[in-house]
Image (cartoon, rainbow, N blue to C red; front, side, top):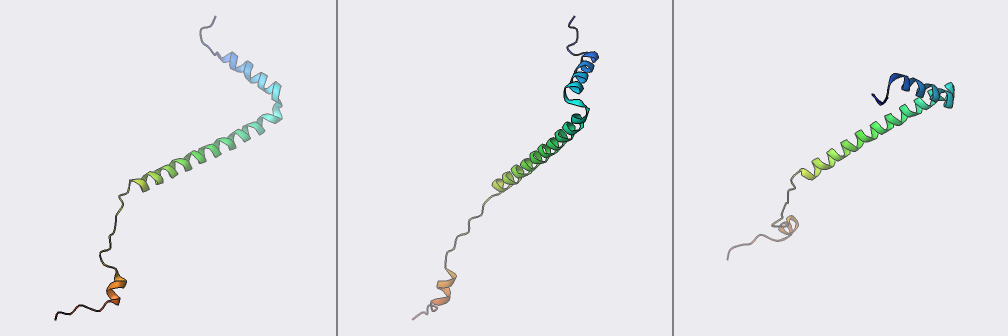
Length: 84
């Protein structure tokens, strides 16, 4: 009795019930809305992946620390040392 969970005639019955419930005018509108939603979801998922890739590449770059041993301003204002 329950050989395959879903046989072709089951799909036909479900399709007829959907058409009867929603009508033939509402189905194209629903399909269009579903398509738009899927495109938006796909573009948002792609944007999130790109954002994560950029964030990971920025955090993976080594940071360089520059130390200043002598201030360029102090060197310019102090007179040169002379030997006596």
